[in-house]
Length: 252
Image (cartoon, rainbow, N blue to C red):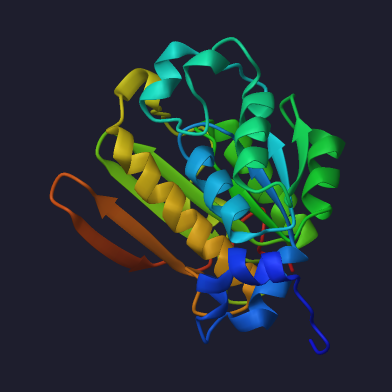
């Protein structure tokens, strides 16, 4: 990318990024020209959305059909007490706009599915799965695999978390369905609880992985699963092989 010009305000706002040799002006411009879809604006989606907005990602598409409740505020930091009763998309939009007015925000105040999900995925450069719903996770994975859009997947429960990146543009990348079977038992924060900073850790790592994919630097967690145990503060990685019989990604 040549002939890149950032305004004086942008040079100052993003100066700490531009100082990084891996990013520089070119990488920052890639972020400014990018569009991402964040599905779920709750515990994981809060730090994801805030860090991507602060980083200067050009457009954030937010999808969530829930409203803000008092029990959310223990961990969903993009919302605050006066937002109780509002839609999460509207609440997050106000917070993100105040953080960085340059970022364009598009909201889906409904659960994406079918053709609507496929169109939303195809319109972006990276998708971030910040949900706690198994059905949505599998649907997102299938849509991203079909559109060949990278999927940054995160999950957190109790004192544990995990992150991986599935990128069907690469022949060696598994997909979410390679790792998990549909119909398995589902735990979520509502029935098992979660230590609030754990979602911040996982969401922050998801944001890092998205920035790496968008700005094209570093080594994203493709083919690797990062496991976090906050109770012992141990981080472990496992290699994720492709499933040659996967019903989603076996044929590419």
